[in-house]
Length: 181
Picture 1 (tube, one colour):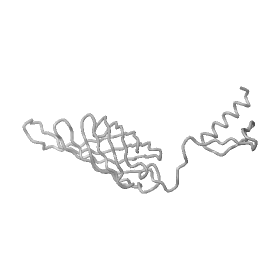
Picture 2 (cartoon, rainbow, N blue to C red):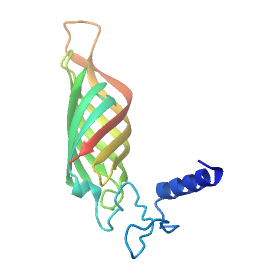
Picture 3 (cartoon, helix red, strand yellow):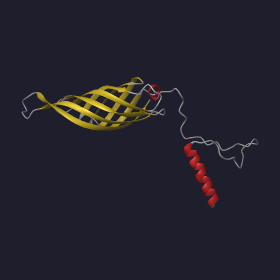
Picture 4 (cartoon, rainbow, N blue to C red):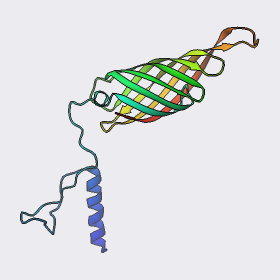
């Protein structure tokens, strides 16, 4: 390849990445009318007026952190701003509700706050998990979640015969990657 061809190839490649309009005519047209280069972006354009949470309400996620430490969860959007979630992992199961502050908008990212009930496998400790974070649901179905939370649960005192009497507070982070159907 000559230097001019390489520069042309780089410009065309850059143009494809940013999804622009055709910039050059095809030097070897495939039809008598003379087709032009028609570079399309790799994903379809976002239709106006479509909410990704309404289009794909059911999601499956793999989680790192949070109440399950390492596990999975499922979620379902009752409305574009109300989400039910249930899941589990290595040390706990959880279920609850999230309120998406900008969930009614037709945008992929939305901040949320929630309230989940937890149950740890060891010691039967019930608890409350209060997350706040950001979730993304693309029109393609791809989902991503980042959150920080306060986990409050009952704990045992130093005496093994005593009931659950202490309250324990934990700060947690969670990252989740998933897909919505």
